[in-house]
Image (cartoon, rainbow, N blue to C red):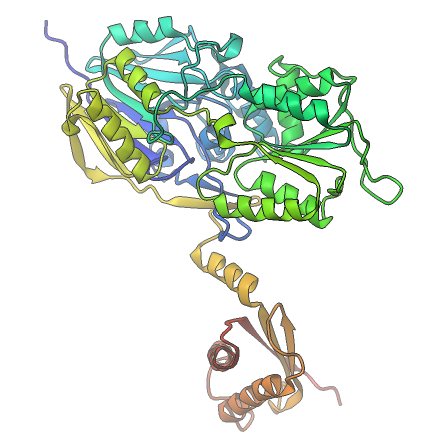
Amino acid sequence: MEIVQDKVKVFALGGLDEIGKNLYVVEVNEKIFVLDTGLKQPDEDMLGVDAVIPDFAYLVENKSRIAGIFLTQGHDEHMGAIAQLLSVVNVPVYGTRLTMALVEDAILDSELDIKKCKLYKIRDENEMFFSGVKVSIFRTTHSIPGTVGVAIHTTSGVIVYTSDFVFNHNAMGHYQTNYGKIAEIAKEGVLCLLSESVNAASPGHTVTGDTLSYKLGEIFSRTDGRIICSLYSSDLHRIQMVVDMTVKHNRKLAILGRKMQRLVDIAVKMGYLKIPKSVLMSLQFRNEKNPNNMSDLVVITTGNRYEPFNALGRMVKGHDRFVRIEKSDTIVVATPPILGVETKAASTLDMLYRTKANVVAIDKSLLPTSHASIEDLKMMMSLFKPSYIMPVNGEYRHLIAHAKVAQTKGYDLENVIILNNGEIALFDQGQFSISAESIEASEVLVDGLGVGDVGTVVIRDRQMLSNDGVVVVVVNLDRKTKKVLSGPEIISRGYVYDHSDKALFAEVKNIVLGILNEKIVGKSLSCSWQDLRYEMREKIGKYLYGKTRHRPIVIPIIEELQIQK
């Protein structure tokens, strides 16, 4: 009897031509398997935006077909949007212990009722079945414990998603790669390998040895005063190194950042971080009597992407509530700037050096990313021997670099699938083609509790406010006669101009009065209030730009008052 081959679709709603926002979808016949639900940190020009998440519209429309969401790790790039997705699609979520603990924390921090969520903890030996489709996972090595890859078993072959990984043969415990499980999956025949690409242009293997530990030991040994360490919150392995040094040198430890403290609490409770209670201390708000500058204190300040550098900048300027950097401090910057953050990192280092503190910027060679380099990618290809390779999780140049790595392993370019978010890879009878259909895969901006409320117009206005400020024009009119009772009054905030030049705003007042005289005929307006305000904004904006080359947001406020007689 001939076996009917499954019809398989693979596509991304996020994670292609970008770093972060990972969300990949595998459809086997009518069943949908969601792999990761990540967010992306906003660019610096996205003022007021907290995060960027995928557009879930397709999943909402097809929620009855979703078998589950399979999370590969606890980093925000892979699970940070889970609460937003569960708010619109209540389906089962699967992940390892630490990952699911972080999911529970994210849900409790949202407005969701955790009792209604379907959360399941899994181990790397687990195999799950959904309408005859088997899903298995395999443990990989990354900077956070409990990281796994996911395999979707179809009659056409296995679809494997590696998530982030490196190969470190010295890794222990929760960080060890399960080579036996990988070999077991490979025996079934891998149809397509979805493998990360962020580090695909870096030669050799990613080295994750003890060189940093040795460097930290040198710093702690020769330092008498307070030590401030900047670390990425996602790297529990390096945080543990700093904790161990703190214990070894009989110091006290303070961890700054609400989110970081919660992550540490969860990791300590579950045994993934080991911090003696006698070492940890809570800092009180800084003041003259309590500067929090004890000589035996170690401060860990963390975050993602820009956040560690922003925190150090606040400490330099004295805006941080707990720490102000002093000359006697030693600052250990163990946060190598990731893509897009180089300028921010450089300006922060410049500020730090100006404080005259002892700044130790750890060399990038001692701080390799926990992402697969060229030889790691080759090794993963050798282990799984897939028919097709689909580079994921990276900007377009990283995807291309990954494709070139595949070529060196003997793959033809026809067998390397490079897609954009929303494009669909079809596997029919085991043969690949790109579907003529595509799925909407736009970005959704998160601002506080608002999801999708912030659009390009709002972002543009915030950028204008940041760069050029605002000018408010207030005029009060008599409701009956339409005569000007008071004003125009001009209020300026953040607008750069010479305050001694009174003629500038005097002319703005003349522009306003001229428009009112033109538009008020008798006791009524010859246009709508909306058109009146629009004309004021346009004429005032053009005048101010002509005089100062700045474009402040102009807000006309026209009030009608009832005069009591």
